[in-house]
Length: 259
Ligand SMILES: [Zn+2]
Image (tube, rainbow, N blue to C red):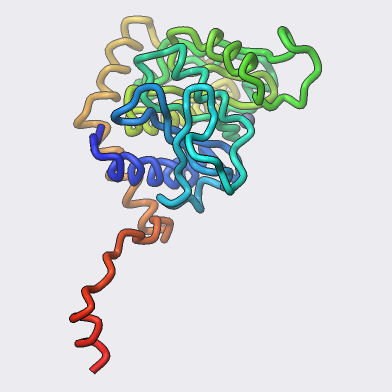
């Protein structure tokens, strides 16, 4: 993971746009990263659709999901998902919450997503199922209260992803790039699982296969390769963020240009 704050923010912006372009997020959904020099804070965009996010949208939050500087913009109402998971899991460096079409049939039917092909093993052996209604009764299903976020974090436990009843999924990673790989491959896995079920059977990899295949798909060389691939696809579609760090020209140079 990069160490410089500006590089971390640039990577987070790209992650938002890649996850949108690959169908994991749409108008909704959000992705965050733990602050590179302060583990008690995290970085997350203001409330905006992921495809539109730029570096200037990224804000800093405490783990209680309070913005560090008084905000002049709208914030994601579900940001407690991120803060409560960072509190519960010191190993987690990045979090994505989404409502991807690929996972929704499983969230609605209450059926598990399981690794059914080698790349899908990036999700781990299983993903727990969390029903907000069990603990909180009737809600609008959004995870907005700290206690709701903490309950979701407990359900996630030591897993890499958790399904949310009639809502979506939350995925975690040890870095932004690992998270992006896992989120995309888990959605691919869910699509293949559903199609295989239509053919009559979809059984999971053996536990040892999941462990071995999962570790390959999260190797740094593999993650760099997939990140480059998804970045190229995003660039080809014209979805890269605008350059925002153009330095002001020196006065002498400005004069020279006017002549
Ligand atoms: Zn949501």
